[in-house]
Image 1 (cartoon, rainbow, N blue to C red):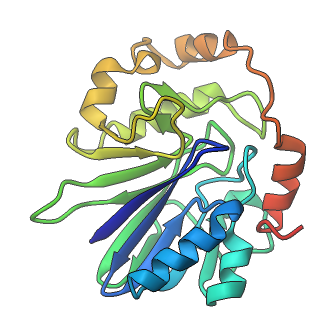
Image 2 (cartoon, one colour):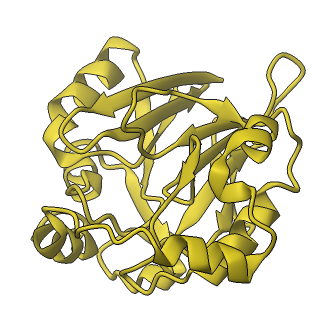
Length: 230
């Protein structure tokens, strides 16, 4: 399976291009990077069949709608998003197929109520890959203080992810230090947010963060509920 990790400097967002048998998927595409995605798809002779968001983003505007207009791809959000603009919604454990490959959608609420991760189980040559959105970051986790976030729910979601094989690659939706990937075993051992005893302790830790709202939140959230075309 082909994979490219793409980066938006302004929002520190990672977008992932996956492809098999010339059928491609984009995860968490950013509208400002639309031209780059179209160029890469053309250069690699790929047909974009799906564009997916891990959740309703608050820090950038999604390219889902623009990609559907430009390529005819199907666009997908988690069912809990309440968005009517997508081509389809996915639910927990749903298989999303491209080429001969499948991504398994895992509902991982906590950062937002519509947060999902996508799991590719791997093959004989590659360990599994987990596209974690804002649920699990490298040495961190996504904030839980808006968009129906819930720290105790996030703790349960994180424990679910840690049941996957430890060698599974962690490919996050953001990073602010330039780190590109990790593994579940590495995060379990070294991520400070995963060292607390239980959901109550985790909620107490998250309540101490006192983060300011994302600069684009008031614009991005309603725009993203319209697939970035509001």
